[in-house]
View 1: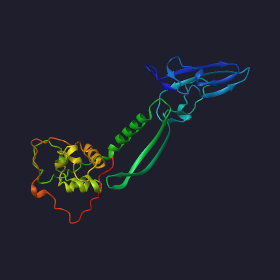
View 2: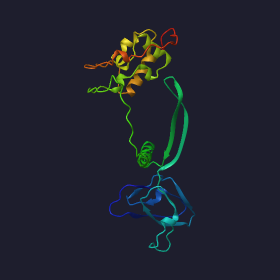
View 3: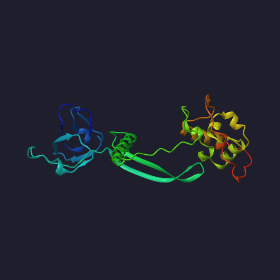
View 4: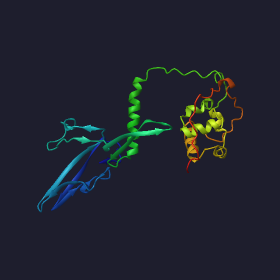
Length: 259
């Protein structure tokens, strides 16, 4: 049952009254418009030719699971039977963890959730609410002050509002070997140099194809950056901050990326 409206009362009664041969289903319940039967095809019982089924159901709101012992009420008249209550809309959950690749690293995990509900809420909403509950409950352990990492000397003291990722080197992007070599050949050492390039300019770089372009665009987007940016007023880091060239480098692969 899904609650549709509760105004002044915190519980109410629905009825079922049927006689004659046939199957009794959830569709036979008279709700008075107070609740909606989510599974009207659910079979309750089967009546014979002289059979008769008459019952009242006390419906109330709740959360999670409540055993019959908790539903017992001494104020109810004789003849009422307390039953277990299952309020959770989630019927089944399955999860799988698989390997995931990010850049050159393949030791990341990917979580895939499969959630089935009774139809009263969407699976996406059930997962969202569950995540919020976990987050709220874990805040009790968050009783520390996180120390902020000091900015590099060439960045410290700046009063501008540029994205701090601009001052990082392209090595920190953890690109694939081909993409990293292409940037090295183009003498692009910092992210601020990269984002000022347009897509057309990057595609004119030797051995730089669509795969590398899409990889870089995706990583920049996760940082709040993109190609073709205009950095008016930006002050680059000091020349001394440019890292020395690596003693060894991977050989460039011949040919361009495939579409």
